[in-house]
Length: 340
Image 1: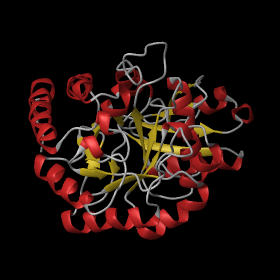
Image 2: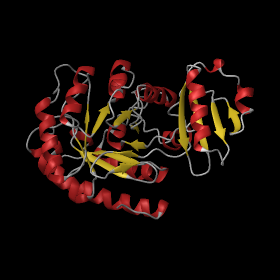
Image 3: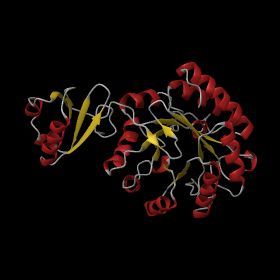
Image 4: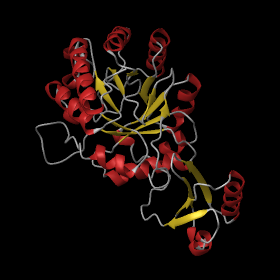
């Protein structure tokens, strides 16, 4: 349930209404937009008489929200959420960012890759220190040493880092080390214990869509994080499993505008995992940009043929620089803003 307040509602009256709602045992979330103020009521709304609520002087109207996701719902928060990822890098609300780097951290070559993507215009560095793999015999990542290498690159280049957390027990370590953005991978999109654990922090979370997850399931996963108090959630469309075998996944570009309609959270697209092949990454990156994504996550490696994981979908630094130039052209054509 949401209460849309009158434009002239005084702050004192709004505070009193929030207090009244909370005394009924519900959470009240106030969203101040340019044109209206909305109070979202989360909890057992049967305790609230909507006609009584609508009769209050400062209330314009009351609206039921049928979707099960509340805090992530645009009806609760009409204005776009802007997530601050550190170093002045913000995403959402017209702020477009490109996250680039290797699939996994392999060693000192991370710095070489980081410098190259930074020079090409990437604003955030990605790299997996912990890697979920289909085979238990495949490379699982460098662990804490990988985190330290990412932090070393961040310190040199002054750019935020994005890296995946797989275990609720590791969340505290990520927070202590000051990881800028914790990524929840597709395999953990419904690991509810992990979602709740990252929700207890204030660290931004890049939440990927599940391997065969629906849009609503993605939003409910975001709701798990936000229900614990962390509103700094970035959604990521990375392709879903279908009957098609010519690409690694089927890149659901529909999801970008659909998510923008349903939620206020930023939406990022990952054309690397979506397609699985280098030759398809650039065209799908351009398509996602044109579709209105708030950012892109692209895998880049200095020697893809010898990458320890996912080399088949990685761009070389030179290819990435060329792709970035084309992304800027698409951004300029669609928004008139290009890349900062």
